[in-house]
Amino acid sequence: MYMVPISGLTGVTSIWRNIGEMNNKGIEVSLGGDIVRNEDWLWSLDVNLGYNTNKLTKLYPTKNADGTYSVKPVIIGDGLGIAGSAQRVLEPGRPVDTYYLKEWAGVNPENGSPLWYKVQRDANGNETARDTTSRYAQATFEKLYRASPTFFGGFSTALQYKQFDMSAVFGYAVGGKIYNYSRQEYDSDGTYTDRNQMKLMPEWSRWQKPGDIATHPVARYNNTQQGNQMSSRYLEDRDFLRLRSLTVGYNVKLSRFKVNNLRVFFAGENLFVITNYSGVDPEIPANDGAVLSSTGPSVYPATRRYMFGLNVSF
Image (cartoon, rainbow, N blue to C red; front, side):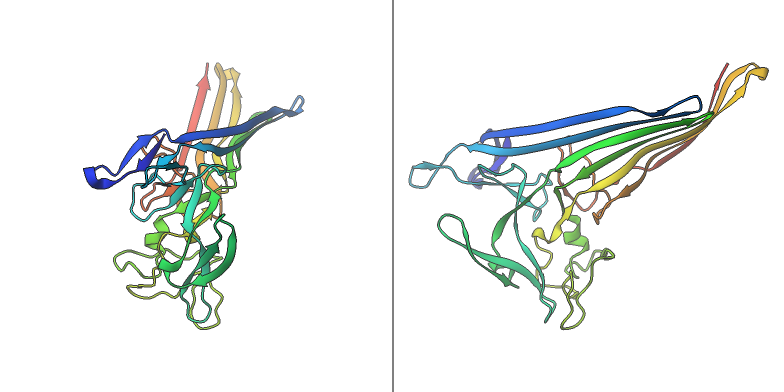
């Protein structure tokens, strides 16, 4: 089911429709066991790997203006409900989460203007020519990348040495793209004068003078060059490795005080995440139960928690 745009003459601009068929394939592998087990040591490891791919196999035909029916790609939103956020395309033979955006071509080294690609295609859709333009309206929409990760899963490990114990749980994802809409507002090259602008990532650079090879166009107050308009500029890798939880404990034997065991422990959640994603969290929280791959301007990251505890058993 997809929310499909329709004519707004009646006041309704989209409706839920079953518009086609898709093929979804995946595999999940789990391995686990004890790596070391003896009188003093116990080390166990569990690994989970998931892989999933999908492809739209059929779209139902729609009625043309002349009364005939034909299959045409369907352009849908990304679920954010924000004007100007990313689009996706539903077309047989492609993943259902394929982005449909104007393709970012970088920065003009001569004047710092934003660049997009202008692609020419033949009647069969094959690319015949490609050029760059600094006029956003001239750039062509392209079918780019998929949102969902290629691999995802987690792994956990537990270690015990005499009276000491430790356990950790990690999560990860590899592949796929996030559309970071928040950068359209906070990385806008000065377009919005009423918003703070984000600090550039270490591998980014701002155009300053002719000849600069930069990732970001020239910044101007009330910039009108449209460099922050919807495009693949704001697509980012969603790869990450997160330490979801860590627990470290020590067991003290106090049988002479009629205490079977006393365990002191420290536990933490979401202690760190390794990623090149520039937003607050590469794991986008669900929006009203829907899983999104685009992030808005006000996403709250996973909460980091710490806890110290004492367990006593008699």
